[in-house]
Image 1 (cartoon, rainbow, N blue to C red):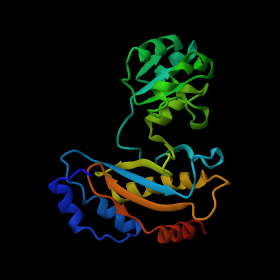
Image 2: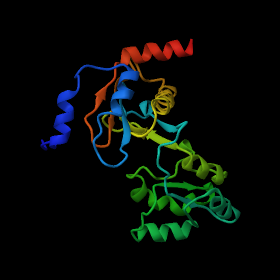
Image 3: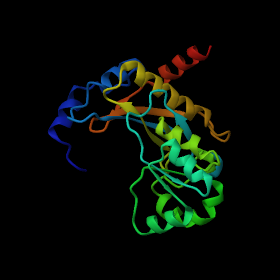
Length: 238
């Protein structure tokens, strides 16, 4: 196991190992970072699902009310008038299907999100082995394959993020930056967790959300009290 740095260990020694309430955790997460840059606030949620079964796969998108604190570089792949529509919507790079295939197969990956229109999917299907493992392959289920490509570009630029449970039943995501206010982090946290709850598959049995942890890019993680979290969310819905 890799040895942690001195600053990491110093922060870890000051943390209470027990689970925290949401408000305490959100306040604490702004205090445990030490990096000179504005660290990302990350969330990890362990779900009571078995992603080896297709009927227990959890994936989707959510638009964070206050964005992520970072604007993604978006590649739009389209044809005809949709190329201009994507460009006007703010896509950083706009390519036709054949152009995208040629550039990406040549090693170009200077983008962080991809949207495409349905008519070019036949061309770019061969890019699955490159974009799939990076979580960037366009997919109708996540709204990244659509004829309304301008709206898709706007959504990603405005803070829409994708989530997908991994093979260890964990969803990793981001809810903002350490510089965000308490209210901004709370709103983004609520939106992210709410989306995970709405994506609960019918085949999932028992407790769905098992654990929730928050951290910054460089810090140890803070465990949340899941029972308290569920009670608070039920009170909000009542």
